[in-house]
Image (cartoon, one colour):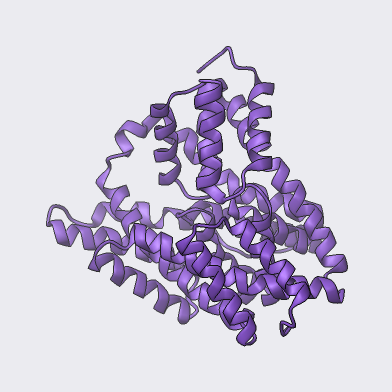
Length: 385
């Protein structure tokens, strides 16, 4: 812990990162390194690597995990809270503002044209994310089988939480059979522990607003507890929960939420704020944001003290080897679902293909793809669903 670093300095640095940090986790990590390693020398690259390794092991968005670890190393729990709070504050406020504008003025013709241009770009971004995550996590036939199983389970409308748990369990089973080193009995507690954490989704006997607040909190706490793989991994879960099961958002509104999440700085998962705002205004935005980021914060506190023992734990590594390919499969299903509702004609299909080329071949940042889609939506006769 570095006593010489003041809390207001931590808050200022991470507020800056949260304000200019476009490009998701990778882009924000580069800015964090520039600010805390190169400019201020608060930590070194080895400590930053530890932050990244721990962040990748936890559920929830990666970049907030990195920030929390750095804040904890600098000033303990107070530093951890300051780092993550000010990292998320700019994007939280922007998402609330966009939510207010969207749900009040979103039916205006020119606004609808903007989002009609953005929606094909969302498809290309999801294809790019699926390809990137798949290339990193589907490395052998066992991973491919788990990914296909997750696709089949989602097509059959099986709850995303069960998909994650089953695929994690399959990762343990496949690796154990492959290595022929150990049995499965001790794995059951870890695999089914999230069921105890998330509990039942029903909230009875409360006034409607408290009932809705409780339901909203449980959905996002569940997501923050069991969804590994970063912000994009949250998209299939949220689509299932808020569009298909609860009908809090229409398909169009959900696609637009993904797009607005790409237009703002901060983690991709900040789209949770927009969804919460749609359900219950500012209170809903706050509950959704807390639910998304709080579980990994609490887990990080426990992991910090036991990291050396946990980082090489075979059981945990095998569980993640099943979850991460499942994320690829789930993201693939969501991409098809969103494409079916976003590609409305030849023009939008061409836009999506060109955007994908820019992402894969020229590595253009997604925010510029979204902005280009907005401009094209205004000037081209794209069919609006």
